[in-house]
Length: 315
Image 1 (cartoon, rainbow, N blue to C red):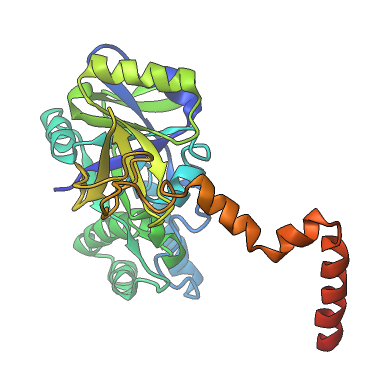
Image 2 (spheres, helix red, strand yellow):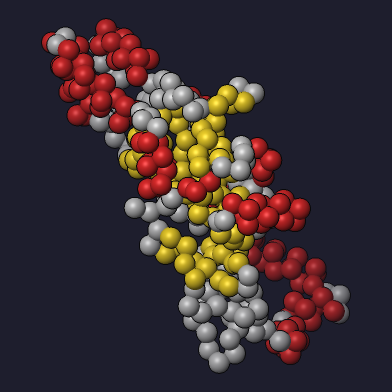
């Protein structure tokens, strides 16, 4: 089973560690998330109003679980922007097998599963709802309850599929949950933590703090980088380059000796960007007409005249 990746803001660095043995993962209700259609991408609500009232009754009874959201990849650029404070935050790599074992040992009522992305309603759920509503037998209500949890908690619109989300839902009655300033925190053992991955723009003092923490907790520490030649995300640690492959962070076979970008290298051992010389820059400037026009003070006049021709012809 692959690992889980939790993106976090730089503001919670000091709240991450509970004690030497536990870190805290924030839990929330679905209504606190940024998708306005959480709960409601389930059935077509153009139905009998009495049946919709029954559906809402069942929804209220079964939607009290708490949620924590993860991704299946640490390389998704929008997640670094949206959930890790525009790369000023960090990401935790967690071992899902160990997390499940811990939650099972505590006999918690929980579920971890992939989000199913679709813009269509769940026709199967509608059929189960109709049976529960019209026939009123307990077994159909039981089937409806199970389907509601799966559909309401693990279904989102296609527009969100870039997140590659995997979601944990857990009963609010879980005895290990801690309430800190009205924030629900799930303590998990530090042995679940495989890596701390800091964002490209994280402040140096926070980066140092998390690096020391990774040493103390015995987990890996990576710094995020964004490649220029391949438009991929990669990671560095102690001058070694790592990439995300087959669900894990692994060392790259080749990388640029200057910027560390993973790359199939030639004899120079440097990527195209780092191979640029002073001579290359001087040559580029010498053949650039704009640079020449600018040096003799006619660049603005030239652009103005070309704009008249270009936009005039369009009119």
